[in-house]
Length: 270
Image (cartoon, rainbow, N blue to C red):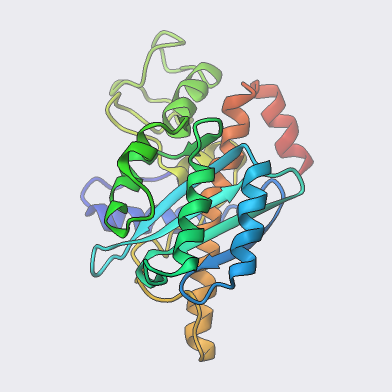
């Protein structure tokens, strides 16, 4: 499906992959969505509303971002998975209210509800390890993280994909990912390699998940007073939201154990 060049650097390969996949239709989430940016300016009434919503929600997708330049843990993205419209929190951890304020306490209460062990937390990778980088902000404790009920969609997707899209290169049909595999539909060639979210989206839904904003200044405020700055903020917001929405879409395949036929029919109806 894709051309590769092993002589390129890791960053160059990622840029090339992004360019190659950009010919596909743009990624489309399962449903409508809205974003709530959480920082020191957030209205307390919104936080109270989100706390109430969290009491009714049982499934979430979580992702995080680090600032490319300072390496600070800068953003926590949380999708409330809902049927009609998903709510996505973008918690700007470099711009939180003071720890002594009511708003900070409300944000902690909200996260305590979300991380409750009765809920299911989906992620692309180890979400506990990702969130552990944010412990210094005092939004939650390591004990709270360790009791979460999590599902690593990245690992589960690999098992699902290999069972559905078997080898046709001469290896045993259900052989694990292997360096001798020449199947164009199986880009992961080694058991220690992992699917990227972008490739998983492309190979299953034939959609382009733009990753050009990966290496960004995530520690900035996600709003600006000038048009150019706000355009960048809007791109970052869409990127951050799409990472959650893509995991939620791939979760559908894994959790409900879709067949190849179901996937084909779904893609034809788009």
